[in-house]
Length: 70
Image 1 (cartoon, rainbow, N blue to C red):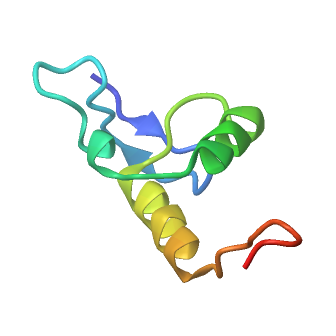
Image 2 (image 1 turned 180 degrees about the vertical axis):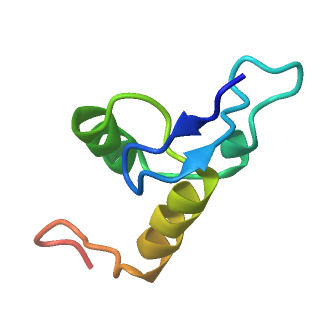
């Protein structure tokens, strides 16, 4: 089996989507907005390193609140 290639960083990786156990990426939490953006920008799965990096970026971003809220 040939490894997959991450469309974000171009590194080879093994996607576990079709494996017996859940893929490791299911343990990475990303916001719906980030997931939608990734689906629009990339075809195919991203490697676990990229997904973890994106999750860390989300954690470090300040939470934006709608205008007029406390």
